Picture 1 (cartoon, helix red, strand yellow):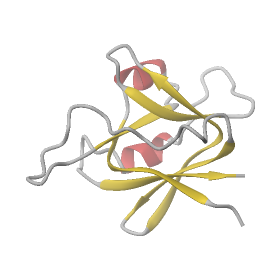
Picture 2 (tube, rainbow, N blue to C red):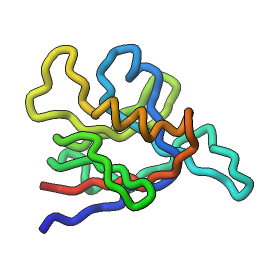
Picture 3 (cartoon, one colour):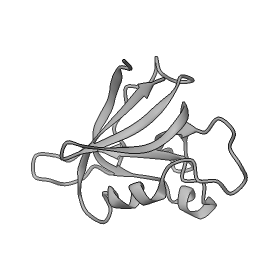
Picture 4 (cartoon, one colour):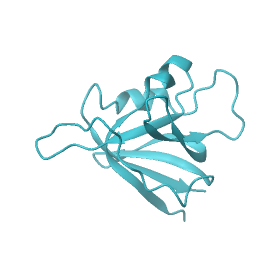
Length: 123
């Protein structure tokens, strides 16, 4: 049995460079305050002891698990200083999307403010 590690919870989003490059490799989680306003800076995620591990990045919304991707967990700082977490596939191919763009769109906090829990499950 594999253990799921909660990385954080909040509104799921990604840096615009992910869409521009077509990689879709990282996501960020943004907290909401007590009145429902979404923070402009991503939440710090509990990833430090998991970086470089192989497994699955999973988003949970309303009790339903959504597999974002499988591979090695990493963190990345984007141009604007936004910290993100991602999964690098075992054998990434040119023009390959690292995370499932269909699932990302379903959980896109910029369109529908759906709060998710983000987990990493080591394999």
